[in-house]
Image (cartoon, rainbow, N blue to C red):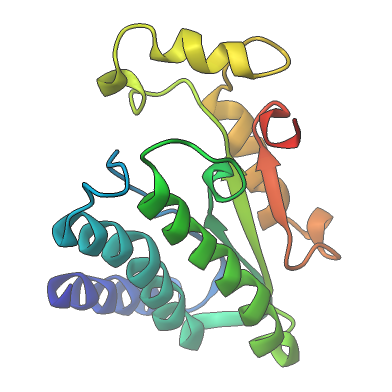
Length: 184
C-alpha cells in the first residue's frame, strides 16, 4: 500500500503542475474474489479492503488539496451492497464501506460544496464475468428485467451525469445502473 500512496502523491503532483486543480474525481477501485463464509482467507480480506476501501479513501483524500469548491466526487460502488450474492460477502462489505464514505464525506465537504455520490453498476459487458465460465453473462442477463447485461457506454453516460452540473442538486446518492436488478 505504501507504493500506492507514493504513486498517488506523484499523480497529484503531476496534476498540480500540468492542470493546477481538479473539478471531478471518479474513484473507481474494485476487485473481489469468490469465497464462502468459512473459506475466506486473511489475504483475500486484506487484498479486497486495501484496494476497494483504503485505496478509495486515500485517492479521494489526497485529491482534496487540489479540488475546486463545487466539484464532484463519485466512487464506484456495486449492487452487491444490497443483493445477497453467495460467496461475495467480503467484496459486498468493502463496497458498503464506500457507500458509507459518500454519506459522511458529503457532510465533511459541505462547506466546500463538493458533491459526493456512488455509481453502482450491475453486470456490464466486459471481461470481468469471463472467469466465471462461458454461461456467466447469459445467467446474469436472465436476472435483469430487460434480459440483457449493460454496456460500458451506459455506465459512462451515468458517470458523465454525476460529473456534470446537470447533477448539481444530486448529493449523497447511490445511483444504481443495473437494468433494474437491484430493485427486484
